[in-house]
Image (tube, rainbow, N blue to C red; front, side, top):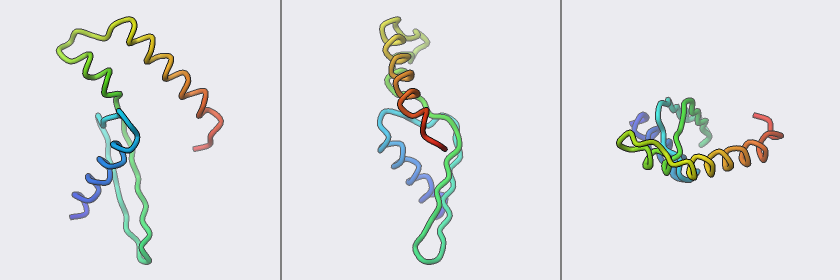
Length: 84
């Protein structure tokens, strides 16, 4: 039951963050007394539009690659000052 709940929480988390899908990961949910819990996720996610475009081994277009690199750079610069 706990593994099913953990998988459901992992799926929900990924749905909430947008177009990212899990590749290789482990997720752990620990429930404590008093209705508190901790959620741990370790692994990698992939950007779904890029995965769909590369389906069948044809690779991504130069236009898509340029757009994805720009999005990644913008995200990193926006979040580089946040502490983990």
